[in-house]
Length: 137
Image (cartoon, rainbow, N blue to C red; front, side, top):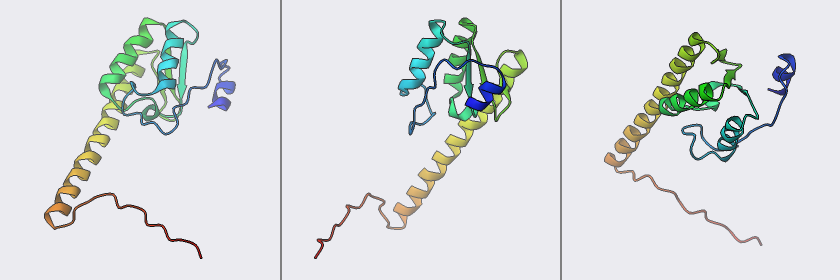
């Protein structure tokens, strides 16, 4: 991403990273929330991400984000997905990608629930097993 910003002549204000936190929603991501605060304060005017699903996978969150971006004259650029919200076509495309990402999450969730139900019906009760440690001799 730093190389892309250098190539496009974007000045990097800050790198925001919520390692290990899902992009399923925006609320529980401290670095993401800080980025939004910096945008509202006028410190940034572009948000550059590798892929859209690293930003959000929620259609509802995307609509909130697009609204905030427009309100603060800021744009989202996702290099891998060729997303740029500075145009009507770009905003349309980003919405379609997010709908597909949310669909993917919901399908995986349904499959997991179906698999768990099937396992329980066949007599296997899924649970976390404790770790058994052996003493060293």
